[in-house]
Each structure stands twice: as C-alpha cells, then as structure tokens.
Length: 243
Length: 222
Figure 1 (spheres, one colour):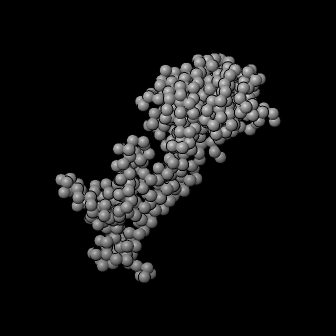
Figure 2 (cartoon, chains in turn cyan, purple):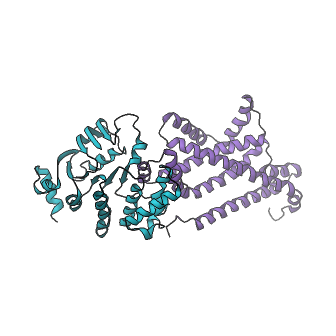
Figure 3 (cartoon, chains in turn brown, blue):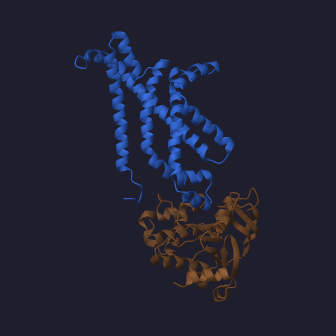
C-alpha cells in the first residue's frame, strides 16, 4: 500500500532530514513511527500524501508514484486521510460542515448523502450532540475527533496521523486514542506518528523507531518493546516509558 | 470667512451640486467595484505558484503603487485614443480609479490571506480540494473578514481620488465646486459645498465600517 525505496530528503542543501528510507506498509497494517523530536518522523509521514516533496528515491502510495513529476496528488489525497497535531479544523465551519465539505465538493456527494454520512461519523466519534458547534466551542479532544471524522468521511484507504494527541491535555488523550484503536481494529491501513507507547503496544502491527532522519529499528511491538536491539532505541524507550 | 458664506450661491447651484454628488457616488461605486474585481484577480495571481502568471500581476501592483493617480489618469486619457480606443471621459475615469485602487485592494487581500495559518492550506490540500476550491471555501472566507475595515479605508481614499477626474472634465462634486468658483467668482463657497458633499460620503462609509465591526462576529467566537 505504501512503499518507500531509498528515499532521501534535504531541507535546503545542508540539512539531510530523511536518510535512505526503506519501508513497506501493507494493506490493513498499523505502523507506529516514534523517535525523538527532530528525527524526521513527521516529515516522513507528510511525504506520504505529498505535503513534503523529496529529492531522491521512490515512494509509491496506493499505486501512485510520488517521485513522478506529474503525480496525481489530488486524486491520491482523496484516498489518504491526514490528521494533524494542531487539528486544523476550518474555524468558520461547524463540526458537521467541516466533515461534509470535502465529500460534497471533492467526492461529489449530494448534500443529503454527505450529511447522513457525516452525522454517522460524528456519532461514531462520540460527538452526536456537538455537530452544530464551531471548532472554537469544542475542547481539543473534541476538535481532534472531528478532524478524524473529517478524514474518514472521504472514505480513505489510508489514514495518516501526525502526533494526533501531542497538543491535547492529558485527560483528553484517551478519547482520541479510543477512536484510533477502533479504527485500527476495523482494518484501516494506518501510519501513526506518536509518543503514545501504550497505543503502539495495543494496536500496532509494527513499530518503527527513527533517529536523525534514519530508520534505526523496526519490529513487532512485542519484540520492539521487550527486546530492542539498538542502544539508541533502548535509550529512547527508557525515556518515554519510565516516568 | 465662513460667517459671511454666501449660502444663496450654494442654493442656486444645488441641482448641479446634487448631480455632482450623485456622479461622485456613481464613479466611486463603479470604480470600487472594478477595483475589487481587479484586486481579487491580481491577488490570486500573485499568490499562485506559476511564475508566468505571477509576474504580470506583480508588475501591475508595483507600477500602480509607484506612480501617482494623476499620471495614470493622463496616461489613459491621452494614451488610449492613440491606440485607437475612444471612450467617454467618464469611462476612462472609472477605469483609472479601478486600476489604481485595484492594486491596493490586491495588497490588502493578500495580507489577509498571508495571515491564514499554514495548517488551513495543508488541511484543505490534504482533503483533495483544488486550488480554486481551497480559496473559495476555506481561505477567502477567513481572509476577507479581517480585510473589510482596510477595504473600507481604501474606498474612502478612492472617493477622494475621484475628484481628480474633474481634470479630464468629468462632472462630479469637485468639478461643480470649481464651476461655482469660476462662474460666480466665489471659490470658498464652491469648495465648501464640495467638501460638504465629500464629508457626507465619508460619514456614510464610516457608518458602514462601524456597522460592520459591531455586527461582525466570527461564527462561534463570542
């Protein structure tokens, strides 16, 4: 579904942010990407829907070759949902309008169809009673759940999450994670950048650890957490797990 | 000086002043409508990525902002006939006002768009909206709002600028004022009457700005 082959990216000429990335994500797989800040994990996930260009190597997502000059980015983005750390809801639209805008204008659904689908999804993320609220009237956790519903309403094949809980107050993290867990259990293909190791342990099929722009280690959660092979992974895990 | 203002002259000329007032309103209204259209187009071109579309829009904004309106007005007034384009003075005047204010409108709207957080562009891009859809549904509705007050400010400038059209013999408020000065040799009465007309329009626009700021509420924000 997602295949990185020898991908390299630089910011400017000096800053080598992604180094020789090779990674396959199969259909239905949930891959968690973790690592210290500045390790390139956000940049990596942003490459998948073309928000970040790259200079070398190959990246194929759902059959679309992103290294091609005229890659059909818009068509690809219709199939790839993206959830941001800062939610990025449209502040001038209600929760329901946020969710239905793209299905109506990008997918071409009728307003009635989109509304029906949007209401069902907002109910699914536990916001049936907040549909007509504007983002500023919602808590961070509620906003992020609207953002997830917004992506899902396009019925994407892949969902990308870029630190979806990092901007949230601690008591709101679980309401967002619960939605993500149920999504994973339904078989959605997901790439999740997160520090929530509990989530990784629970639902990830694979955990990828990045440091300084390179993938250092990857493995199933049991072996990744139980028995990490690299010093840097061990060091990182000791910092995020024991406090 | 104002104590012995000859009110009768102003009363005599009231029909002409009224006509001038209406003409100033009409010239300014059409000029500003044109400026909004030109400004939105120019702004859209300056912020889109294709260089060959961007360059002419930037050149337009720069040329207008760098030169006086009077020069632009004469340039059109004398230049267009040489290209074989013969238009009534009043049309040339409206075009000049629209071209002139359009550049400023473009910059005002651009500043509104640049103030929109990057995440809004990324989120709308990630949902698969086309460039035009992003602008229409997500960016412009948010960007226009904070630009309303500066746009009304620009409209006020344009109304005053329209007095320059008297120089290409378009009949508007300032022209009627000059007429009073020339016919009756009473420049103070003429100018006072003109100024009163401009003040009225200014207060109308100011009331509009006040009305806007009182009733403008970002949905969902108290």
